[in-house]
Amino acid sequence: MPDLQAIVDEIHEKLQPRLGEGKVADYIPQLAHVDPKKFGIAIIDVDGQNYKAGDADVPFSIQSVSKVFTLTLALGKHGETTWNRVGREPSGSAFNSIVQLEHEEGKPRNPFINAGAIAVSDLVLAGHTPREAIGEIVRFVRYLADDDTIAIDPEVAKSEHATGYRNFALANFMRSFNKLTHPVEHVLGVYFHHCALAMTCTQLARSGLFLAASGRNPLTGHTVVSRQRARRINALMLTCGHYDGSGDFAYRVGLPGKSGVGGGILAVAPGKASVAVWSPGLNNHGNSLLGSLALEMLAHRTGWSVFGP
Ligand code: GLN
Image (cartoon, rainbow, N blue to C red; front, side):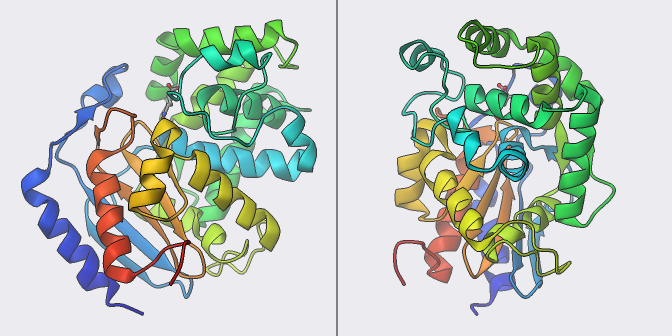
């Protein structure tokens, strides 16, 4: 194993002069007011060893990174029938794009664009009230991270709702094609709340560890998903986890990853480690600019890649 503590320290150090680059999401005040110079990185390897640097223990809004956890829950509840409701192809368009939905009759391209995650929220709602479904998601993430302090930021959830015109448009459009089974208000209530989960890099890396360890969380001994399902979720993260920037992320980093507009990225080095980075400044695809760069540096220094030794 490479000296991971030395590597994260070096990445943190090298990025110091660039902190603040990129554009912080400003569609809600809670994101607009985050200090753009924050930077954190946390790695948990499959033996449970933890390495971190910078603001790795400062909570931030995980936003779309949460879509990995809701997809995992939906697959657990509905198995392969999940794919009747949402596709598995990269979209090549922005995370909140509506154009493809009309051509494809309300079936979103993949579970990580907003439309797809809204369809997944509808699946997680099955048999529940919105409050129960939100509770189930929070309990699931706490179980994954083995940390009962993880919570939703209610102010973020409220702002997401207040400014969620596009998400309402996407959900109403899907509903018009009979592609949602619950009322739009309920489905978006679930969606906005899971986007508002607040977590630290350390908590996020712990939550993603099952994906690096064939479906089993080595910290708790719990089998979360089968080996095959872990591989498949990783495949979706690699192909779709960065929206229309997924190809570039795969080229530069070579690992499955999922970004969020809060500036977080969860990346998975299968058989090696789970990594979370946070830097609020985004590139023009809505992915963390320095977070992607940090992961590129990490992949380069460790040699981790899903494409070859
Ligand atoms: N809450 C955000 C939205 O729905 C999530 C988007 C993201 O993180 N890319 O627009």
